[in-house]
Image 1 (cartoon, one colour):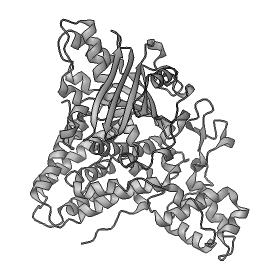
Image 2 (cartoon, one colour; image 1 turned 30 degrees about the vertical axis):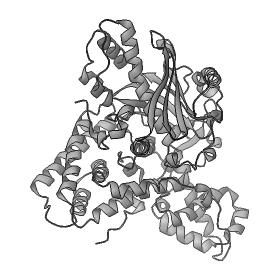
Image 3 (cartoon, rainbow, N blue to C red; image 1 turned 90 degrees about the vertical axis):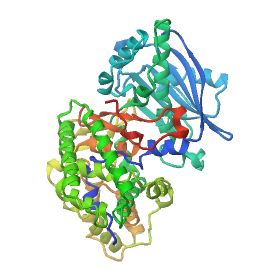
Image 4 (tube, rainbow, N blue to C red; image 1 turned 90 degrees about the horizontal axis):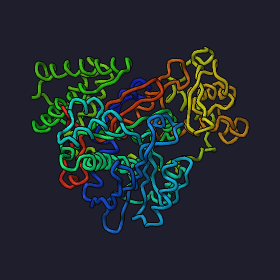
Length: 553
């Protein structure tokens, strides 16, 4: 039996993409697989009694070393902010290529805590900063210094001690450009270095609380229990900075989605699922309920999705127990067909992720196809004709061509870059000024404009000649030809309409990172948790890759 890949015209809607969850394809999980046999070390730990100072952690293998340099800073409570306009943070970090010298550490000390205002070098590969979750951090210190472990229920409501507020890479603020390191096998997968930085920051947070507690009460203090450490992650506060990424990198987006869709197709095509494989899937599903039920947010939007997910999961488990016929062939295809008919998107995509858990042999080869050499497809085929372009638009953009941009609500928003922080923002063009600085992220509107114009041109007109007169549409002409080879390259939705929920764009990308417990603070930014349940660095050589379903409960 052959199963078709899911149709991009329905899959690539923002509300659907905003229902994606982490999976075995997620970058933080594949990062741990890649680095599980590397040697971990804490090379430097010079903190004062209050926990301020410098620390260095590293991963090494053969002659390669990556080092996280940490600076824990003393700041006032009113100086702590997760907003991108902040200028001070509880800690700042740089991922250094190699072993930092004393001179490197001095240079980094003068620059890393300043973040965007500082200047890094080609020796640094990623940059980040983080703030304490103050209530949780102080609770842990108080408990440990008095000789007892912190309250697990209190910890589970947040799930981390620190949250990062940005992670930069690829040439920003003087960091090494991607081309310098892109051929290294161990970091070929997307965002490997960013995942490494966040993972090592997590370990620093545990070491810091142990150190502060010990200095606060040397005779009575205990260290944070290893199991509690494993079940705490690192938080992240994410705004619109990452939203345009999935628009600006269509081939990379395609490769992420394509890997997921091929995995689903191959799993549905398994004629006879073994009992051990199905039990593995089912056990992960049941264990994951702890993670879902401990997912806390004050967002009405997200709580509605969580409650719907829990109800649908209960319905699905009842189906498995009462109706599902394991003796029939193509068991996962049975399951997929049932969930498509009976469940909402949030749960459908949750179960799709869960179906991958038993199948390392299917997933592992796909992970290596999730990067992209986008420069190879940058050139526009100028010898092609307007007729070719029209056919592509009608085939690949039929949903987008239905949008009526003469209606005010379909043009409501515009994307721009803030002058102060050089970060993307979105505003209402009928209320805010600045639409003259609009970024080319309204792909649906521009595709419609392109389609209208080519109807006035001869079928035989070459694309090169067309672009001589319509250079402002070059970006969407390029995208149209990209979709000819990469079917999941385009969001099939309006990114400037009145119904836009930017957090759907954020969540899509974060699901591939491996984030969970999405906590929207508005429709434009949210908090997440990463590496919750993950093995500690000293456990990596013998870890279980279903760790993601561990829980503090």
